Image (cartoon, helix red, strand yellow):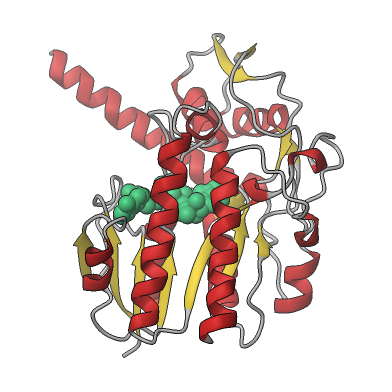
Length: 330
Ligand code: NAD
């Protein structure tokens, strides 16, 4: 039986990845600081611990793994990454995790390690025009990410690829672009735009208003979780292509268009108040030419279809929370 290790298995993408690997017949060990908040883990073994601790990393890599997925990171949505308040923690914590995990894998002669970088490492100056952002993989340098989160991702991408060159490892590096879906963070400040908008729409009373950061004309693309996993596994198992490569959707929409889609799904009438808030770059879209060329595959699922699934799940969370509150106050 093949064995996989998923670091960050208590998180959104890691939780889904564990399920996918179990369906494929792997024995899976999940690792995280915390258990998954929204679902029972499907992992055969789940180690709770801190990957900033080198001894802990060595202890979880205590045998051979055919595939190691390193998804753990100190991260969150715009409200966490772009305010500047968490910069030191983001850089220090995530860099330590990557340094420790690579060392632990090298010591066990584990070759196949996947690393999730982010589109946040692309230079801000190529993403000023919301209608025409450039996120081709080769536009990464000269580097100028707009956040320390992006700088750490860039450093760690280079770290994994350096281990390929110097230690004959087969690490694979993907640049994820805004992944969304059920069982992700949807409240509390670390949630991303699709989840935040679904929550606001699920909670708004008919005829009231929801608040949106910025004028809503900033553009992004959003990739549904199942497509993200498909790309991740295809890249991991590619015989010679290491990346970095974009794993994202190229269906670019403005935030106002995203709100309109969720409004249509919800069947609710409401207005939108545009307020000040952390925004990130003006425009971003995944450029899928390289993934198509190297893996013969690129994501195709329409955004709207993924939003139907995600809105349904978040609405159920909102309703179950409000039922619980009613019971507590009764
Ligand atoms: P997530 O926050 O849901 O999951 C990350 C997990 O890492 C969390 O469960 C967290 O507890 C764990 N973690 C953090 N510090 C740890 C530590 N010191 N020791 C052990 N575990 C620790 O995030 P996600 O959305 O699942 O993202 C997974 C990866 O993909 C991250 O590396 C992220 O930077 C990258 N990424 C995600 C997106 C996206 O849109 N979700 C976009 C680009 C890149």
